Image 1 (cartoon, rainbow, N blue to C red):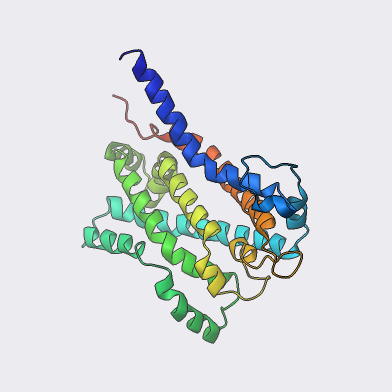
Image 2: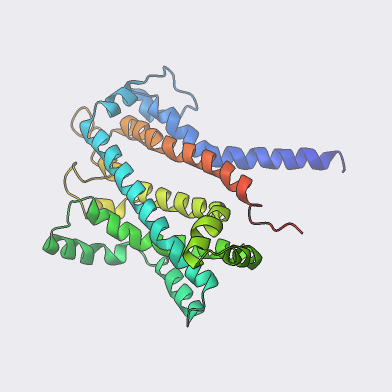
Length: 274
């Protein structure tokens, strides 16, 4: 059994990894096919082709969608961190009446389904002129991501020993300076985690993007992909959709790899020696 146990563990890990990666592999496999091969269930493309990727990058609406997604996701992430970090620090360290109730109310917002506000937002944005605009997407995205980012950062701020902040205050720093110069650098894992989750939500969100936009100038990339058409009437553009899905997944994969290393490296940043 002692010899068999490592083999079984390795086999289980391999199966889990294969199960998780297979959908993405199938997406890549589908993106390399054209014509009749798209309906084949083969695990390997018969004659791999990059025609679908060339078609995607020749589509001006897709490139506009990439630009819009980058603007919306980066803006939403920056605002969520800039606004959420001070709020999280206040909830973690300051004596705020009803702190637990406030934190519970903030967290409950994240459970709200986007479909519940899609129709009212469509009507309101149309009336005030925010419909079919990037700011009209950033604001509702911030509503959904700010509570989660605040909750995550609050949890990390609480883990930082109070001795560090007291030492900083003895050196003449006020609360804001202590937060900016001491707490925020030590809380890099929490801030990065909150920013990464916020960016992924804003980058992938589809329902509000398709509801609150109507032209390529404002659509984000998930909504732009929904308007792909085949080369002939009634043709399903499976190959181009798969290629576009692979393309928009690559930035997220790169971000996760980069920031996960930073998170692991910063997990012990708040330790106190002695």
